[in-house]
Length: 330
Image 1 (tube, rainbow, N blue to C red):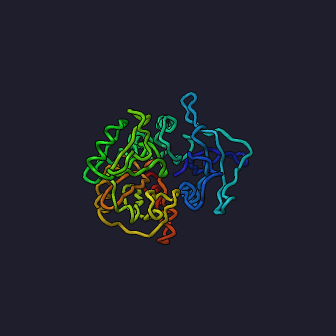
Image 2 (cartoon, helix red, strand yellow):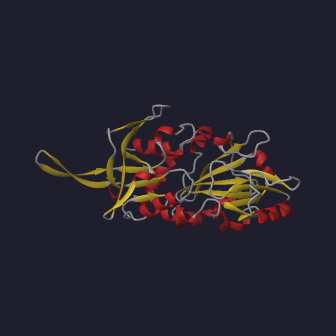
Image 3 (cartoon, rainbow, N blue to C red):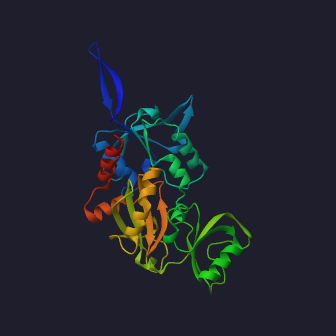
């Protein structure tokens, strides 16, 4: 494992193995160590002897057949507000073909900038492992991918038409709407049949500016949703996210509280149904969301939840991640 480099020492040339990872993520100075999975993965890599190169998506480039990025080699520390240090004063340019692993870890929105980065990273040679697989990230929109598993999803529509949403509300009496490419619990609203308006939707427009997903309201959300982590298709842990009283959103950033949970309802059946497809698509780290008996999302871009699962169960899922990665790819 590791790229082979030639080095010169005392008049002789030696071959040495240098292990490197590059992590494509949002601003490292802004991450919250209480929630951030990317930090856990990078920290575990550092502890295993990898050099860690950090860059932002906007610093990814293509030039003369080379996929490269401007960024920093960093040192990480498990210490709030002092969790990293740059190893150089200025950004340096790195050919990403020279690293062992590239981790795609920026958060949505899944827009054209995100899609463009997957096209670039797709060009890297097979000797560099890119996770999750950029082609599969591009083809597995997190709210649409569950459609491949119809028997596990609640009644759902995607539309930009107000009338279609109103008809769906009449049919189902109680619905939840959310932007198709939103994240972090933003833009989620509940509408009931006796409401005078659709909540959170501008009804002055016949056609909305972006696609909206509407789903039948699942009352078990009062018990929380469950973030279930799968690594290389295998279940490794889960955490319940309990919403605040009378609130709809259970996401941690929306105030949801973590609670220990096992696989309940149809969770095991859902995990089994997804396993083969996740492995074939090389979607190596995935966080699926379930409410009651239903699968609601398959998160493939930058799934979180490892920190809470670790703390509630006294485990180290970052170690599990790298153990499985090194066995599979090296």
